Length: 88
Image (cartoon, rainbow, N blue to C red):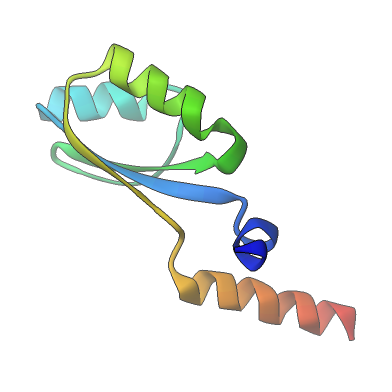
């Protein structure tokens, strides 16, 4: 858990919207978009902004479902290895 906080200060939120139009609106709404296909969009949110971001999403958009995930482990390992190389 400590490693995740140190090397991964963000979460990925996969949002399944009611329509592609809602996904497009969400993509234009001050979030960092990682991926978007049809009515699904994945955004990157800093850990300290999760609660406020979820409130904004739930209050302003029609969504079917959402999933909150840690970034893929290979990205985290890559950050650790890169940091080690710079520390040498």
